[in-house]
Amino acid sequence: MSTYRSPLKLFVFGIVGIVLILAAADVMFGHWLSTPPDTNDGVLTTRGHAQLRGDLIWGGVMLASGVLIFGGSVTELVRRRPIVVVNGSGLVIDTGGEGDVIPWESIESVASGVEHDSYDGSPREQLLVEVTPGTELSAGLSGLQRDGDVVSIDAHDWATAVTEVALAAQGAHDHYRRVELVQNYEPPSIEWETTIDQPDVDAGPAEEPQADETEEDE
Image 1 (cartoon, rainbow, N blue to C red):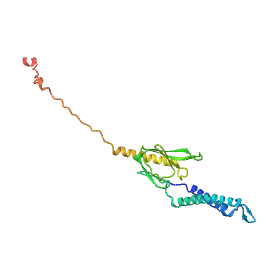
Image 2: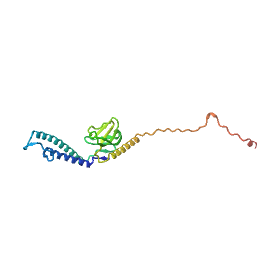
Image 3: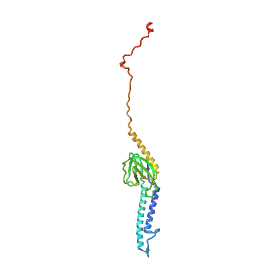
């Protein structure tokens, strides 16, 4: 099972990037909607120079943000690389930067949940992966938070519901555990004992039955 970022959300992010680029062009050059710097007979005043420097700074920030958001959205739409893949070896995570694989033997459980964003407090869906103590993850992964042995993967922009991914991952993990138990199973050793009843040799020979007295008289 593979999950990707939602194309609709990526498209919306791309529109936001275009809006930021246009706003930057307006603040820095056009002033179609924004207030232009103060001038005196077409010459910038001292206050106008200060306003122009501020406009260039804010416009540069908006332009850089717009280009990054728009470029990232277009790249994700064209590339369509899965974020999380559930396969027989484990969870393949590629949230950005360096990808990593968490093998099933390093995973205790997989579940879904909701956590509040540390910046604005908004609820965000998460894929919660409990790993075994001492498990190391790639430092280049983005969108991950680790609290002890629980790794939270941000799933707010996934095309597949995080609950479905969690169920598929937990099912694959349970299958791995069953296969591991079967491979490592050692049947108990069984020793059979057989006994045969034998006569007691110390008791002497068995007595012969005596003839009936009536038979002797005859």
